[in-house]
Amino acid sequence: MKMLLHICCAPCAVAIVEKFLQEQGMELGGLFFNPNIHPKEEFDKRKDAVLAMSQEYGVPVSVNELNMLDYWRSSLPADKRGRCSWCYSVRLEEAARYAAENGHDVFTTSLLISPYQDHELIASIGEKAASRHGIRFHYEDFRPLYRAGRERARGKQWYMQKYCGCYYSYAESDHPKKPIYFMENDL
Ligand code: SF4
Image: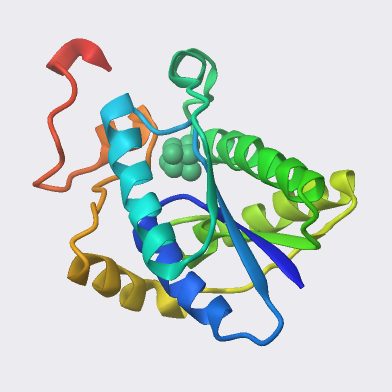
């Protein structure tokens, strides 16, 4: 079975990669496609960690550098469900298209490891995108692997982000170590 893992970041992906690599007959590839990540420096840090993971585990990962920050900023609904729904749809539609075009039977996403994401919404969007492109979406509740993945990434000294990705999530984050990317009135 040829599986494509849509990868949002290395800490979320690594435990899923380890799990899939133990499965017999699984051919695994990855796609880093996250035009939501604001700002560009943050995108690059997450991308570099994913490429380090790709190299270390021998899993080929394609990187899509599309940057939609201005569009995200001007068009994203402000309410969380509305904006996350849109954000999942953009990413999973492209993952489904890429998977189908590159001969994968099935795709899934590392977003499903996060206890902070809306699993039902992701599953519904993933299944619709898969059916539009004639492949399958693999839903699995990877949340039990969340902590192990973060520990693995920390152990390897990969970049650990402090917020989900978009500028709204940055603004809402109260993590004391969040990076200072914005002036106070920039949001
Ligand atoms: S909070 Fe996360 S999933 Fe929701 S719109 Fe922002 S980056 Fe996307």
